[in-house]
Image (cartoon, rainbow, N blue to C red):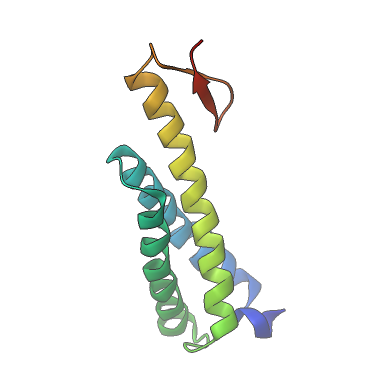
Length: 113
């Protein structure tokens, strides 16, 4: 599995999950709060994936040009960012338009009858 990641599990957890995962969460939150479409979040996470590969290479001697590592890292970052996007978009809609929407769950809302 480490050959797929292009680095060790510890580095993957520290750099991808903790550091870049926080950046992805904040990216999703910012896109939701500024009413940008979800596609922008995915595009920004593609760029965060490149940054993640570079930090892994520069700080921990991981593989810079590991395609599978980039795909796995970016998929994790996109999942985190889209979770944050949906969480904040639902909260924003329910808070800003309480006469139109009501909360039905952590990530869901519906139109008021």
